[in-house]
Image: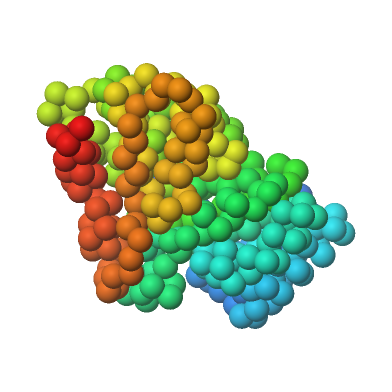
Length: 322
């Protein structure tokens, strides 16, 4: 697909699952080894187009996520490039042992696409929220974890993952009509964070859907006279420690993620900083360690302090208490 403003807008309208399905179908036209698998969630995961174009390369394992990993690993061992899809929490919690064994230990070339992470499932509630997936999968050896910020970055994640040798977990969130971060083509590289905005007082390191909210929060903070740097940490593992090190010149580091405050981006940054003698304080913004009643997507983000206004408010409060 040609990357232009019209196609970028299309990817945004499709949302991350739709962008994933489009990217995979296009890549499969060029590479006959690409196969797609679903745990009975073909349409939800954006694979309708793929199934229609490549019916012999699509497998529905049914609602059997552990088996989905085993089948995918077998296909990878046979030289295929399997993209396996299901809800992010079903991958990371229900099939965690199989991921550890076949992808972590055996390093089979399987690409996991965990969709509906964070609060994407809205009123479906806690059983369908993916809030611990990064923590669980990040602890497994040899897995690369990607968390795209918009439709175009999702497209790039899929293509780069297909070309990448080794197991990858792509974390999808948000909904259709996603905000656009990248209005034109750009260079995407696994493991290399992207500085979206420079600043000297506060460095906000964000990932996934929180990149857009972080940029909007930065505008609020700048109206208060603060200089704010914003980083898109699209690769959560391996973490771009060079980018984190550069952020340490600021007076405060803030990490923002649509994930538990335990074990995700904030923890990864703190783990790196713990090795340094000199580093600024860090504020970890994410989902607090408790379960709340369900609501629609925007409501849940605001309730957990992840709307742009709540992000800015919490940063200002933290600064006041330093």
